Image 1 (cartoon, helix red, strand yellow):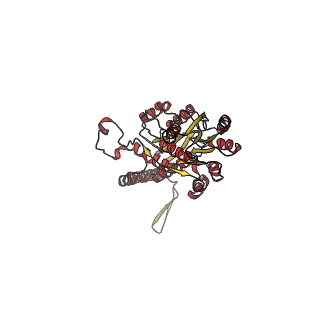
Image 2 (cartoon, rainbow, N blue to C red; image 1 turned 120 degrees about the vertical axis):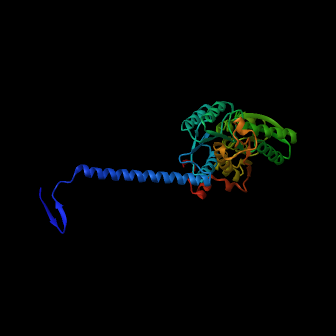
Image 3 (cartoon, rainbow, N blue to C red; image 1 turned 60 degrees about the horizontal axis):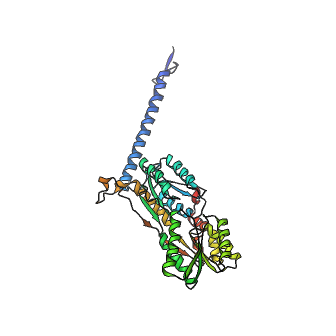
Length: 368
């Protein structure tokens, strides 16, 4: 083996020691691994410090789900938009789920699918109250917080319930219709038997008529079940059987489209009053084809619904002066929150269009 000296430095033609080179690479890898671990530790410590300073934020991956039936109904979209906004402000993940059918068993199936993801919480509109008792209780027992909205399952373990005052909505609708008819005349109702919030609106409407407007006579009831075609046929039949029919009330928007068409074909003397709105309903209100609507404050329902749900998942943030800790009751539980409602007429209908709302907010709605 030869070697030379140049400038006091020995230069060798001996092959590089493979073990020595491998050891250098290993040391470099271990050094990088240690740096990565240190960075992860720093980030975790930073997150912990940030959370300690502001506990109102989500852990990475903390997810909240909204679940509904008839998922294509426009009513839900503003609810989810503000549910999503609140989630973003808390640094949480959110998801919109549900079934397109008016079928409680199919909705429960989508609820169970969401639950299988083990989310932190689910904001659910239970189509019917009793069938949801077991699924909601199972979710609570699993550690997933549950809050109901717009319709309730009061015998379940759900922590809170947010809705507009369905009794007030039905009452207002009755007063508006009766005043327009000078307190005298015939009216009918279209309904969706078994859906809690709709049943309350219908019951309140009829009760108000009986209590305050005794000369308003209920001449017919029909189950339209949120089907515009069924509503159209029902109003045609009611109008034929009762030529003096002056008004019809329904607790949701889809039926109103069919009802209004039947009323229009009958000469427009039947006033169509409803709850909720969508773009078609707004167009018909502006055109004078629909008398009016009481519309829940959907945005507040979604925003406050998320807040209730997040608090239900984090009851450790408060120490209430009651027996919550000893009894195991969730200290964040609020039996009822009223999100309010608006009265929609031709004068303010432009403020309720979903597409204009999305454009203003610059979002993709339920697709996000």
